[in-house]
Length: 298
Image (cartoon, rainbow, N blue to C red; front, top):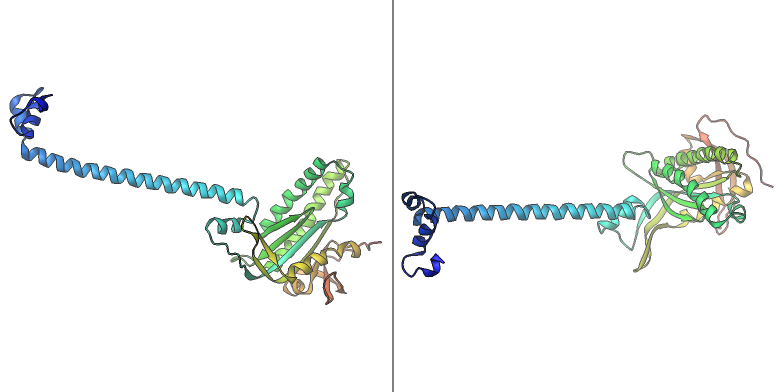
């Protein structure tokens, strides 16, 4: 109102009059001069810009923290469906459709006779049994530096690649297979105590080159490994039922691991879908383990 009624005097005089209402006139005039107000406004402007800059910086930092938290949540959720390393690559935008050539060890596992066994169980009971079985098995695979590429009914396809600071992938795959055998033995003790039928494991390992990458359509992709190394491991696993064994490896895996593990040479085997016979070995245990007698299949 004072500014509106004033037709004479500069704006600085008006500011001085407004500021002097509740102060002694001399004090108001001494502090609210043109020079002092100009200096005060410049200083206030600098403070405002500084505060605005800090506010903007905090906003940016807050946004970055939110993005990092959300990316972490995405990685965690995606990591429940694919390998954690694959999940991180997908989130970071580094996945490629064309794939790349890798040297790995493939571990196939299967529950022997599970299809016929599960026919007498309700579907919910079958799912519970499989989840109880897969939970510790997946943990063992990951503890040896491998990952589960996919679940195939009651079977698994696990991949072991080279990792810095860890033993060779073939050695880790063989050690993992032995621990899976031990884990199932413990699980069967609990099942027998509960009056349930024991489960039987079949597994096979093959080492060699594969193509690792994504396959599928733009709307649905699957990260997997493809190649003859995978096919032979899958076919070899099927021989366990005929041979009365539970852990088989190819010569490629044997050559990389025979110094650390004990094997029984089973000779050359013909596997379905493969023209060349496959030299096959039964994995017994660590070096020094006593050769266990295997039960021939009928």
